[in-house]
Image (cartoon, rainbow, N blue to C red; front, side):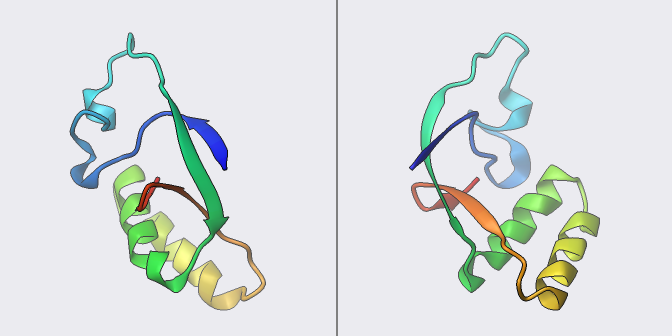
Length: 85
């Protein structure tokens, strides 16, 4: 297990843990996360997270291209509960 500061980004980027809800005075909380190798079941969640984080599909498209062309590439995900962060 690894520990990380910050909160997860829910779909839409809003809510109590979302970036739009944080103020400059907010203090990060300590959360337990597991770091593991991605699985094929993670691909859509990874794409959705990248689309949200980068406000568009360009980065997610690049990541998919790397995944398709570089079979030896290592891709890790941070998981809190059942959600990729």
